[in-house]
Length: 329
Image (cartoon, rainbow, N blue to C red; front, top):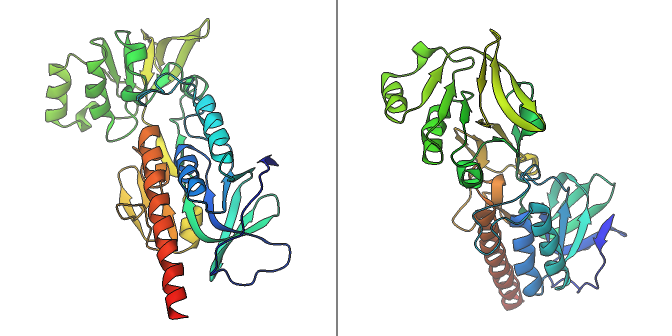
C-alpha cells in the first residue's frame, strides 16, 4: 500500500525500454529507516525520480526513545521516521510499504516486491539494516529495549546508577561489562554458559579493577515484577537482584539483495557485510549501501550521514554518466 502518492517526474535518459506496466525510477532505495530516508531526501532535492521501498521493520523499533542524535535526543524512533517520510514526500519521492524480495539486472535493475509488483531502477541504494538475534533466555526478548539493553551509548544515561547485570553471550561480553561501569558502579557479570576458567587472566584482572562482580552459572530467566526487571535467576535457583541487564545480540545483516547481485563481502566479529568505499559504493557498479546494512555499529546519526553520502555520490555519478553519453552521441 502506497503511503504517499505524489506526482513524479520523467526519468532522465539512459534507461532501456521496459516491459509494459513496469514502473521505472532513476533510483530505488530499499529500506525506509534513517539511512534510506536521508538518501531519499538528497535525491528528491536533486530532482531524481526516486522510490523508497520500506518493509517497516526498523532495528530500533523496541526502543521507546533514541539518543545521541543532536537536536533529536530522546525522540521516539517512530516519530523520527514519520517526520522523515513527510519531508521526503515534499520533494516528489514516492514511498511504498512493501518488501523487496529479489533483484536482477539486465542493464537496469529489476526489483521484485513481496506484493507482486516489479519496479525498475537505473541505480540502487540498499539500506535494509539488520535484525538482532537475542540470547535464548526467557524474559530477555520480552523486555528488550526497556530494561534489557545492548548499547550503553544508546541507553546508559537513562539507567545510570542502577544495579546492572551483563550476560556473557559473546566474545565481546567482557568488554561490554567493563564499558557499562562508566554508567553504574554496581555491575554483575553473569558467565552464563562460559566457564570461568575460559576467561583470560587479563580480563579477570580488568573486571576486578573495575569493581565488577563475576557470577558463574547458567542464567535460567530474567525475572520481572510490576513490569520492571527485578532479578536474574540462575539454573540452580539462586536469584540476583538487578534492575537492568545488558546483553550482546547476534547481529543478522539483511543483505540478501546484495548477495544476489554478487557483491563482495568481508567478515567481521559482528557478521558479514558488503565491501563499500568511503561513499557507500559496493563492488557492484550502480549499487550503494548504507546504515546497518554495512556495519553493526551504525547508529541512527551515522546511518543518516551514510545515506546522505551515498545519495550525493550516486547523483554525481549518474549525472556524469548521462553527460558522457551525450558527448559520445
